Image (cartoon, rainbow, N blue to C red; front, top):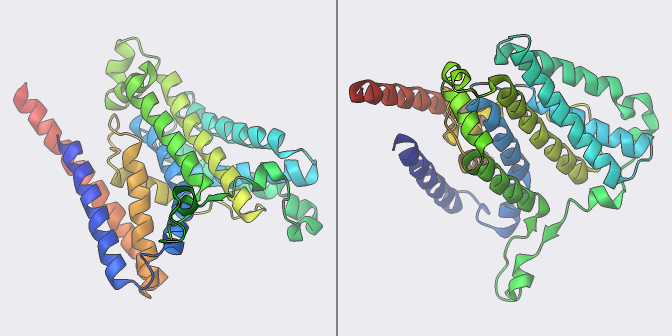
Length: 336
């Protein structure tokens, strides 16, 4: 009941903020700005969905931004240095990120490291790996060259909805980026996995009570490794999307995304206590942050103030999550 009311409250807050910024922020409610929000935060929403899996398993993936950078550089190198066509390079880049995610899970399960410590270490390690394999560093002439592979650059495609609906002459509707449709596919797949499969049930059971899950015959370690692998898989998808958008990969790709994805997931109702969450909440959380930051930018608010506000939003979400968990525990105790 608490989580459902939180979802409605989040949706209501999103609608209110969108309306307010449409009134007070110049050109916020315009086709071009909505296109920018969809393009700029669809990939962040995909990452937030990926981040939800280890959090539901009572973990955390601080390396997700560095993993994006790693996948992006792998794709860049395979295409620009080794001349591997996009249709072959893209799966390898995504698989690299999935394996990196699985490594996080192994560090947590096999070496019994705290998720914060394990993924903080791989955050630094993967970022170092990005610099180590950087084709831009190894071959300086590539720093000024762009990827032209049609399989890659075609992912940065926009669909003119107004023309499809025959309304182009009447009203200017925003074009929808392909990344948004990829987000929809990821969302549907993640929601099915979480709510319609044995794995999803086991994942929530492990996050809710690992000891009870083990006694019930669930392979806790396997579930946790799979959760981190799915986080890495989403990082790989985002890496490909970003390379397609910028037609290159830099050593800083993905930097700072980890905190935003955690904030989006927690704001979207994924409990840091584990065992609770869905695919829709993190998406709404990501776009809520996007609406706030874009709206404040259009209103001329300093970027430093935006960073402070993002921190306060995350702090509020964590506080709400903790109080909700305590309330549920109290209800459970009384019910017993």
